[in-house]
Image (cartoon, rainbow, N blue to C red; front, side, top):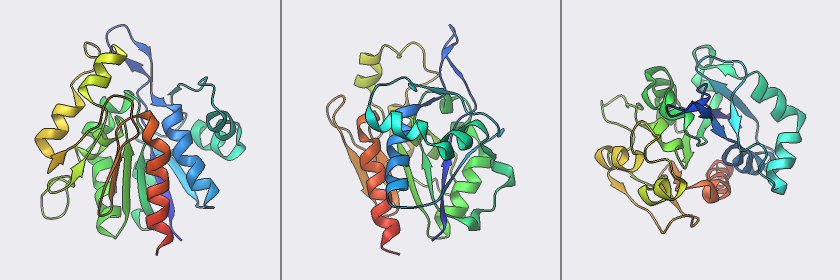
Length: 224
């Protein structure tokens, strides 16, 4: 079976105050936990390669602690592969964990978008959670359409952004950006687990949805 490509941000701060940021660790670890439990190989990559900035690595839950303590994961996070050195033929799926960092790099990266489009058009599965669906904004398919044009998706909501106190800190509101591009944007109440699975695109609303996105990706890949 081909590997799962996990794409993470290199951007380590949020807002004018330059708060510590990057990839929100539980959204990465809870999905990785599903991949690892299913014995699926994965690579972690970023635009620049090297160490990936994480926050939430101190979140006290068993899965987060277990996965971050895994030597394979630690090595992969400290030395992410560079996207421009990857062959899309090696991967059967792409996963974008959330965190605010990717709003500043992956959400506008043609390079990451082209790689994701190549994997998807080669029958790959694409998953994303929380702010991760911002990584789908630059994914243009060979017909010129965005990957989400006729697809229903979800992501971190206006209400959750407001609850979290980040409305004035983010460069733009993700819910609005996705609503303008996707076939449909759906959501549930704040902080409820919720995923949307349409074809080979799977998105989750918030950190509570990371495990469910990982499970849905594994279920699709195991059918092959």
